[in-house]
Image (cartoon, rainbow, N blue to C red; front, top):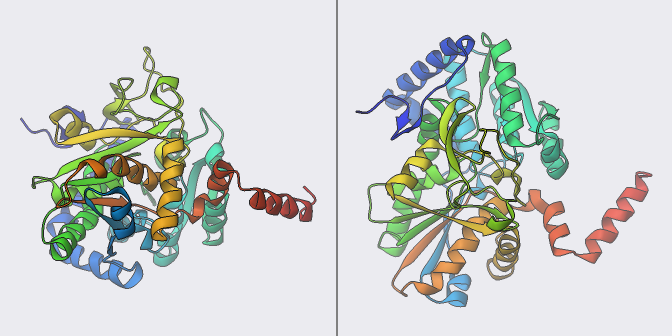
Length: 408
């Protein structure tokens, strides 16, 4: 029996009573928008005039020759306004907020891309905006914090728990419970209580719909495999949606961090360390201890160190419709360097996880095969983290000189 809000045994909405009416209102607004063809038309027109959609599908011919095997194509979500696929979801939620008559938006963010996108949307629609961000992520993603503040958003560092994304989500939910009448919570990923997983996946499906048309036009065939990194799951659900009914293998790549054997990672589906539980209002695989307490996670990519995962992806994992792998921090940095040098593309560290796994597998495929990698965001936001990982001495001298100028 199909239960609304469930994907197999995952999903649902486990809510405090005070939030039930607000989620019901959101669910009704989403259902009405989804049934209204004019909503999708307004959404696609907005994204074409404001965010450069459709984003291109770029043949990576230098990488294809380097590895041999399959021909590699890259879906360029980095070319969205604000530099990532996050714009797709927040602009659509902005249209919903306007329909619901609310005037304030709040959001959580890990890598900062969702926060920048939400602050941008709020400026565009005239909403006030508050963004919650783990203190550790604030330090890792200072350039994005700067832009959120310049766009008019209040950025609130969260100092509880592990000071990362899961703690930011908890704080955003507390804010929402206090301010339901005028506030909408712009959840950034395909996780959380129903209707968020279905709603975010629907808005992000624009990626897969475009990619399917583009690969057929450019390669004359469907891809053998599609690769996407997986944090909460929004970019993966976005591009997977276009190929769900095709004979195309869907490969999600989680954060292997310092290695699965170290415990310092965020691989909920690609390791044997994730287990099913209920937290943050929904049921899925979490990295948790025997008492159900959430474990600390690690990734070089701030957008991938979330402790849970989309219930839709958990269902695809259990049914075998999608395969999940992991890439370590070291593999990711090396994949990023190679992609920059050979294609002139700068993937975000999150996106570079998908590149790293595709590079392992492309040489083993036939020359007639094609694969698609979703470049979910651009990497210039990661300049501090990447420069540290590479150990560039000129960059270190630059930072020391800037610090001296600030009398640090």
